[in-house]
Image (cartoon, rainbow, N blue to C red; front, side, top):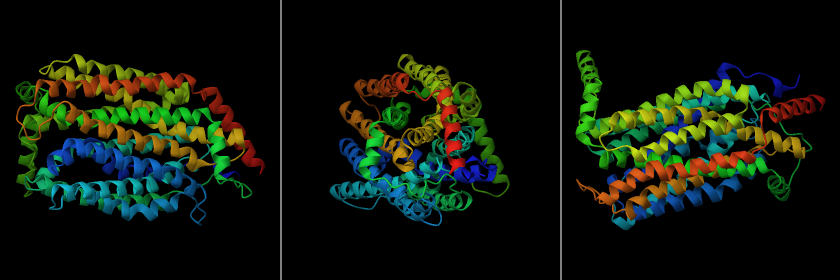
Length: 490
């Protein structure tokens, strides 16, 4: 029996998804808090922080990406091509994650060198870990329905990590740091590093590579590049990924500044009290103290509470959206569902440009609806890349899984570098003053535009590009059937 046709067990799907939980404890922290950490905690000027995030991402995440893709596809071990890299990079990933959010006592120039070196090294190890991890999903099973299911499992794990980071990270930083954010970030990231290392090892132990290239398949770098040049779905996937992650990094990194500088604090405080949020936190602390535990130090200012509820609620609605993803994709095809859901989610992003500072309910409703529709797209983006790898094998009779998946990782890293750098750069352009109680009207308007109009532009461009993506539902089924027949006939 062809092993590629075997169905994945629940254990293997869960084990694989734990790798995404591990990676996203760090990745989500980078997206949401890196610019804030560099400017407000490590005290690096905004313009300099922008350069560090951009060039660290380009050197470590983008330039190293094709080298890693070529290396992974040519790795031969008794464990397979991709699983070993998850094991080999588990500890370095954790150590470097901790170092990035550590604040040594240095002069400004020393801080810049330290931040650049640690962030660049983290991006290199992230690629060495995440590219093989992503490629592994393309060789676990040959069934596209199984892949849709696997993607849903893994992105439930992503949403769990996102919820932890968005809702709990700031309160945990303040709690374990006793009010000192520098100490708090270091201690929380140490915990994330330990947990992440363990989860990566579990992923390695619970997965199996089933789709193995023919033993006689040998391709040169030139042949791989020629295959990519003829693979239009791969090129479109690359551009879509870049654009989507620029938008994600820009809006995600700017949200905390949106709450600090635009949202009306008095209206936000009234809203939190009116919906019972403050009573919920008081009740939680009362329960903890009654059973002999320390109170959970939740930030007392409404801005921090509102930010956590805004981003955390968004994560929950994304999780609901993910639950609809597989059924919709099985019926209508990944491309159609991805494009339609991304377009609708972008509309709810654009409306942020029209919300006044005291329209708290509308701000939260818009976020939740945007998150729900974006959640539908999350599993599909990665599942589409696995389809592109099958498309390449179907067309060229050669499989280069890691090279194909390099499009996603390269696009992700480049998008993160550009979007993250844009956060710090826009703050610098609009005149952000670190620690100032009142920012200029220009800065406030710039922050508002950044999370709405500016972030929506790359999302809408992605929707347009999908019109040229040819792997629709009918082609998915044709490719799957013909590849399974080929593998059975070997």
